[in-house]
Image 1: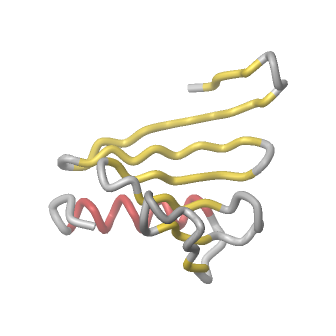
Image 2: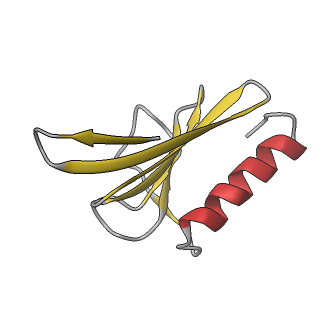
Length: 90
């Protein structure tokens, strides 16, 4: 699904995946990409610092744990596989 915000000329693509009781959102913009695991609200992105990192706590967004892998599609694959093989437990 592609959406365009005409006000800010922001091009955004977004897709979602349902795995057990979780929904995983994957979004791309010209600023970077993000993967959000709901309902836990765990965020993996590369916004602001351009290195992939995890925000493990939605209430403490300033906490970042940097990860070695920078390939968003490989990270998405790992997240989906992990959720599927662990019955939705993250």
